Length: 324
Image (cartoon, rainbow, N blue to C red; front, side, top):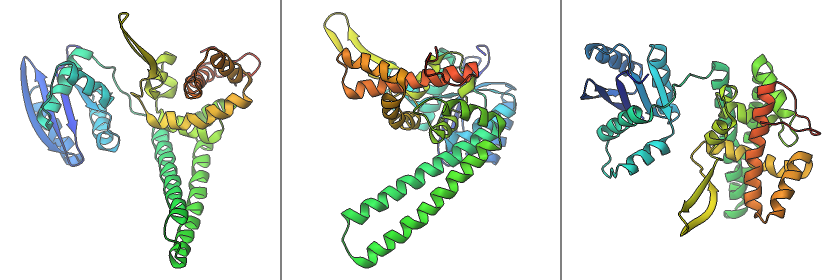
């Protein structure tokens, strides 16, 4: 991977800009962010005499997904990088100017120096599950907004009647999407097995299992639990310098916020009903940690347990726990 030409890609909604680092030279080019543009990129790389590159781009969801998969299927090495890492890389080099051309070059330089791990596309079943889970989340958020308008807006009956009608329609749609998620998991043996293992953990029900499996596409491929925790942004971030500066440790939040959101309420429930988590939380409370810090630590602990049951293939044992 280290000897390959580096291709930094800055992706936007309609276009993407590339910076090719090869043989001590940098070449720039812009393409439309659509299948025709992907083909143009492949032809351009061929003209540059580079049949195989290490392409690096920020993980920007729908904007980067199709291009990443195209490059992977074309035989290139692809790395999807958390945008926060690119930002930190730019700050470490005191780079203040920002435009698409410079961003693509910056990403290529990051690829050269950091040598990020190669990315493998998630299975189609996982891609579909993620789409369903995120659609469900969007529907629930919309319903809550409408409910808020019922109480916070003008109390005019025609408006209230319309809001109630919309909420009723969204309720029905939410129920239908929830059924689709359940059917999708049941029809895919791997997802079903993983969901059952996660569901066996007291505090994590089938809905949380679906969210975790959808939001962590490579959940079963992590080699170390620390990688999974970092993906969720639940790894501690210390603030300390010598003896003069020692701030309170916080979570990094440099990760998937949807995973953290999915774990928050299950963590609260697990603190009451899961004996292992309850004992863990009580020890933290005895050490003087505040409630929010305890809940955060419990979220991290739950990820350790998820990692353990999936790696061992054994359901959660509340008597002995899982060593991750």
